[in-house]
Amino acid sequence: MADVTKYQPINGGNLVSDVKSLFSILKTRRTMAFAYGFMFAFVVFTAFLAFNPSTTTTFSPSFSSIFGGGNSVTGNSSDGASGSRYSSFFSYFFPNGSFEQSNRVVPPPAPEANLSRSSNATVQPPVVDTEPPRVKNRTEVNGDQTKRTVVPENPPAGNQTLGLPVSPPTAIQPPTDAAKNDAQSTQVSEVPNSNQTKSLPAKAPPVADDQVKSSGLKSIPSQNSSSKTEEKQVAEGTSPANYTAPLSKKQKGEMSPDSGESAKQNDLESLKNCDFFDGEWVPDDSYPLYKPGSCGLIDEQFNCHLNGRPDKNHQKLKWKPKGCDLPRLDGGRMLDMLKGKRLVFVGDSLNRNMWESLVCILRNSVKDQSKVFEAHGRQVFRGEAAYSFIFKDYNCTVEFFVSPFLVRESEVPDKNGKKKETLRLDLVGKSSDQYKGADIIVFNTGHWWTHDKTARGKDYYQEGSHVYEVLNVLEAFRKAITTWARWVDRNINPMKSIVFFRGYSASHFSGGQWNSGGQCSSETEPIKNETFLKRYPPKMVVLERVLKGMKTHVTYLNITKMTDFRKDGHPSIYRKQNLTEEERKSPLRFQDCSHWCLPGVPDAWNEILFAELLLKQQQQTRT
Image (cartoon, rainbow, N blue to C red; front, side, top):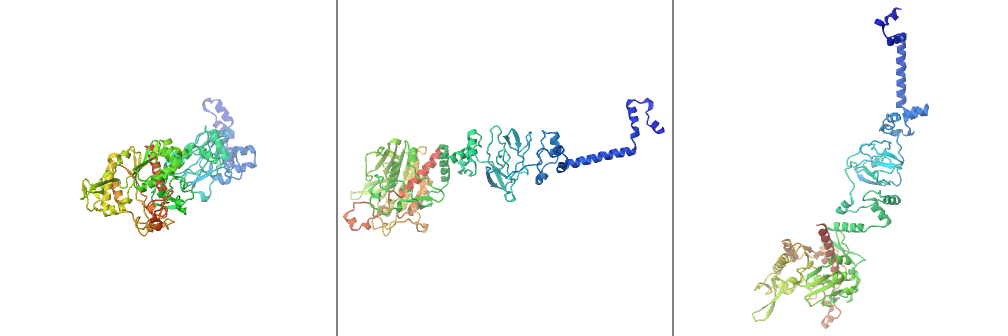
C-alpha cells in the first residue's frame, strides 16, 4: 500500500494521472528490460533484411519487392558495389524519387551500334533509370513513353570525346582493359526532334562541314551504319546535322551538286601550299589531253604526229608535283572562267608553242568547233605579229603577240649609212598598247638571248641614242627585264588583269647547237635522275630579282626544271615534212631540240596555268 500511495498525485490529480497510475504496476525493472530487448532485436532484424535483399527471397515475394525493387535480376553481383543500397527501399515508398537503380542490365552491344575512336579518353557505359528530374550530364531519349537517363558510371577522363546516345532498345557493353584509353562515340539510330541531345562537356567537339571544307579534309563516313535506319532518319528529319543525311546520299549514290563542289573546294585547298614545279613526270595512259592529229591548228613545226614520229610514250606522261595532284585541265570549265575575257600570250616561239597547245585543248572541248576561229582567218601562225582565236559561244579570245625579247627591236644607221639592227633596252615592244588591257597576260622571253648576236653583245644593245659597243648579255637582259617591269607597273591594272611570267624552257642539243649540228633524235625517255639536270639559268636568277622588286604582283611559272627532264619531248628530226635538198642529204644535222611536240610538254604548262587560275578565282570569290 505504501508503494501505491507513493505514486498517487498530490492535490487530487487528473484523468491522465489516474490512467497512468493504473499501469504503474507494469513499470517494474524486469518488464522494462524485456520491452527494450525486444525492440532492439526487431530493429536489428529489420536492418539485416534491408541491407541484404538477396536473403529476402526466402520469405515472400512481397517482402522481396519491398527491399529488392521491382526490376531486380539475379546474377548481377558484379555491379552491386557501384549502386546505392538505399535506392530500392526508398523507391517503394517514394516511387517518384531520383535514386539510382542498383541492379542494372548490361546486354551485349547492338550490331548497328557504330563506334569511332580517339585516343586519351574513357568510355562511359550507360545506366538506365526511371528518373523524371533532370540530372547533369545526361541525354534523354523518348522511347515507349518512358524517359531514360544516361548516367556516367565513372567520372570522365580528361581530353575525351563524348558521343551521341544509343537508341532505347540498345546498350553499350563496358570497355575492356585494352580499350580504356579510347573514347567511343555511338551513332544515333533514331532520335526524335522533340528530345534533342543535350550538349556534353567534351573537350573535342565534333567538326562541322564548314570546318572540314576550310581545313581541306574530307569527311569520311563510317562503313558500319545501317542504311535503312539512316533512310528513316532522313525521311523523319531526325538525322544528326552534317552527318547522317550526306552519308545516306553517298550510300544510295545520290550525291547533291553541293557535294561535288565541296570536293572541288577541298582539291583547291590542297593546291594552296603546293610547289607546282617540284615534281616528276609519271606515266598516265589517260594522256594526252587531246588525241594526236585531232587539232589541225598545230603548226607543222610542232606536229610530230603528222611528221611521222613513230614512238608515242612521250605523249603519255603527266607532270606530278611532289606535294599535290594537279587538276586535269578541263577545257569546258576553263572556258567558263574565260567568258567575256581576253587571255593573251606575249613572247617568243616557245610561248606560241604554249598558246597553240591551249587553243587545241579549249577547241576540242567545244561542241560546235565552227564557232572557234582565228580572227583574220589565218591557218598558219608564223610570220605575223599577232594572232587571235575567238570562242564565239563564250565571247572570249585566246591571243598571241610576237615579242621575243619583250623589248623593242630597232634599226639605226651605221657609219656607212646602212641600217643595222639594234635592241632597244629602254623600250617595250610596239604591240604593248594592244594587250595592256587584257584580263590574263602570260609573258616570256629567253631563247633569243642565247643567239649569237645577243650573246656577243657587240654594237647591238641600245639605250636612247646610245649604242653599246660591247655589253654583257646578262646585264643587257637585266636592263630589258627592268624596262618591262616598269611598263607593267605603270600600265597594268592589277584590279583587272592577272599577270604571269613563264620561265625558261630547257633545250637538249647534244653535239652542237640549233644551227651547228646539235641533236636529240635518239632520245625517247625523259631524264629520271635529277643529278643529270643542268644548273638553273643565270638569266632566270636575274628575272626573279626583278619580279620581287615590282609593285604589280606577277606569278612566276618556273617551268625550267620540269622541262629539263624532258629530253625526249622535242620535234628533233620530225619538225617538218618537206625537207630542202640540203636537209635530205644530212637530215640528222637539222634538228629542233628547243620547241616541243604537240600534244606534249606545253600541255602541262597549261595545266599549271589552269590550276593557278582556279586558285585566283577562289581567292577573288572569298574576298
